Image (cartoon, rainbow, N blue to C red):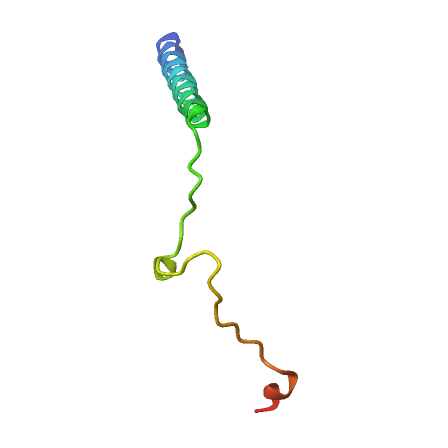
Length: 70
């Protein structure tokens, strides 16, 4: 390898290293900004559970051991 090839390789290596560092810096900055925001107290609910209020009784199915023979 001649000196020009090594120089081009070094320039490309520095460009990739700098871009990687800049990308990681930006991602960590945005992540830390997300932690500074207040959290929502509500939680995501399944669309079929929209009509169910807190405290409502739901139907629960518990099979008995004798039903396994059917």
